[in-house]
Image 1: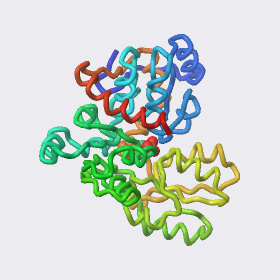
Image 2 (image 1 turned 30 degrees about the vertical axis):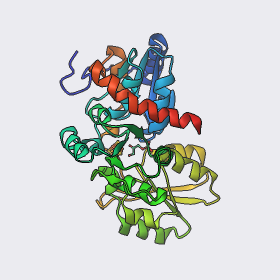
Image 3 (image 1 turned 45 degrees about the horizontal axis):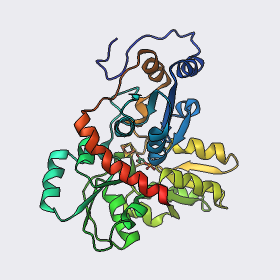
Amino acid sequence: MNLEKGYVDAPINPDLDIVAEIRRMCAEKNAVILAHYYQDSKIQDIADFVGDSLDLSRKAAETTADVIVFAGVHFMAETAKILSPHKVVLLPDLNAGCSLADSCPPAEFKIFREKHSDHLVVSYVNTTAAIKELSDICCTSTNAVDVIESLPKDQAIIFAPDRNLGKYINSLTGRNMLVWDGACHVHEEFSLERILDLKKDYPDAKIICHPECQKPIQIVSDFIGSTSALLKFVTSDKGNSFIVATESGILHQMRLANPEKTLLPAPPNDSTCACNDCKYMRLHSLEKLYNALLYNAPEINLDENLRIVAEKPIRRMLEIGKSN
Ligand code: 13P
Ligand code: SF4
């Protein structure tokens, strides 16, 4: 088996019913497919469970499957392995990284943390296991406020790695967390000018955004929330049209749940594209997923000492969710 490219590069019979074969192998191997909302719609449609990063980490911790096929990015599959060390965790393309996780290199972060040794470290799950090892508690965009509010009001906090989310939480909670200067390439790329131009064509459309977007986009937004919060908002709100400033994969579930509503992807700075895709999330395909199941590769493996330490801040986060 050739894994040189970061995925199984094996030919697939073009006459194969790939969806039926994937389902058959899942049943045979007791495998479950977990997919993030930012995946291609074909992958979302075949998944056993589609969700945001918090839902997916909960599913990974609870599943009774023997194999988890993770259609998401590397840190998500790594989180699944941290929580379910005895399961086989497959990531169909190992190149599915994350620009936000990469914006927080462990060696630099360790020095930063040592300089502020009286601070607790809250890290977004969009980090490597090496950053989780340096963290006291994790959060996602869904539970970030609950996690911060679970800490004493006078506790000094470092928040890493997303600067836009960190500052947004500071504004909601009245805290003054020290925020690491990291960002995600997708959410930094939305164009305020093009969003406002789109709004001129759809004056009734509500602008909604993920908190990883820059402040000017947040300011013009009618609602700010994680992917699952955005999905709930579109479904429960009385409005009929929405400009959605997050990775465009989420529009698939929004359209399935709200076929009568107009859902417009917010445009990025690059004027050749109408929507904004995560170049890492979109590396997976049905073919790579099929080969991953067939060959049981590429598999996520972690040093056990690192896994044990990285598990603590994630478990601490999951405990907070339980009491809400
Ligand atoms: P969610 O926490 O909404 O799933 O977001 C994950 C992510 O990668 C945002 O860019
Ligand atoms: Fe990472 Fe941004 Fe892609 Fe989310 S959208 S996985 S934060 S690069």
